[in-house]
Length: 419
Image (cartoon, rainbow, N blue to C red):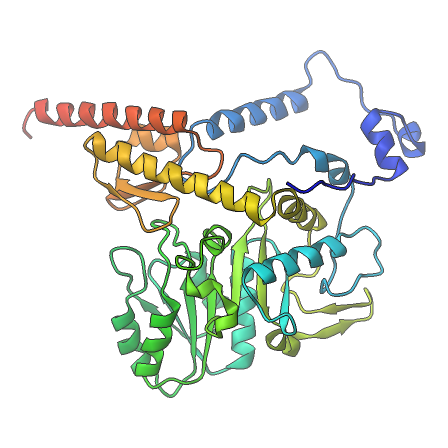
């Protein structure tokens, strides 16, 4: 584990931390607490409610094993990363240097061309996908978007906002896009460029679309002009850290099969606020460049003001753990998924798992278990995700609760009087 440089804070921030009043604090002293301060009580209740929920949740991908408290001093300062991260804005309170390091780290992970790489820290996977499809529309104004029924729920909304004609392709039972259906549907629009949204880690089953089969389907349909974006919000970082034989081709931009990749920072990387990173080819972003005299920056990002705190926190995680440390976290999470699957099957539950995923798919549990464990459900199916922070004790307790609830539900149904 590499050593972390000490964080430098201003004198004012240091005063805020140790309670020493500055000039502003002397003019406006803090409001003294009354016997029962309702605001503080509400905050305490909210924190307690969240912490209790996180002790039992297994349904949504949010790692909980990383301590971000060393960054607390900088959360007391307004940090605004205005404009393209390639250049610093006039506004002094920013973390552009750290954002550039994060972009370079991710671009290296995804093997982007060092000469043609570009990216920035987003508000999350949705913004990353929207910016990527915006670039695709600039490249192919008459393009048709293809995405699967297992793609993220935000994709139809993005297509509507960008006014991109879209075709929904059914997914196979594992969650991958159906390549035969993609070929057939693309053939109907063979004269239009294809904009494909592939997924690395679908929300319900953590399926990974085979990028080589996607391109093969487009070729068979007679389409040569294409843009492929990979929504890797859930699995981009952990699966890019797999050994070469198991690493998905969609996460290797050097193969020339992927034009852009977006990931989330609040899932596997565990940031305490939603965020993400978009990596793309610089040549694709250049048509979006607009100089802004007011801020003396270049406007290429989807949003104007962007959080400097998320860039700082992403830098912290990548510097603190490095590729080796993140790889160990991913392997431990996958080992826990294997353990969970084994325990479910051993206790008579129907369950399965896609290769190298942290997601175990199971039959929809009784509603009390769904509520207690904050499980996502889709029809008759649900899933549990063993993100970093999930322990074997949590898994054992979940399997115990599920088994008792399932047997109780089956018994009540068996003894219920006929209608």
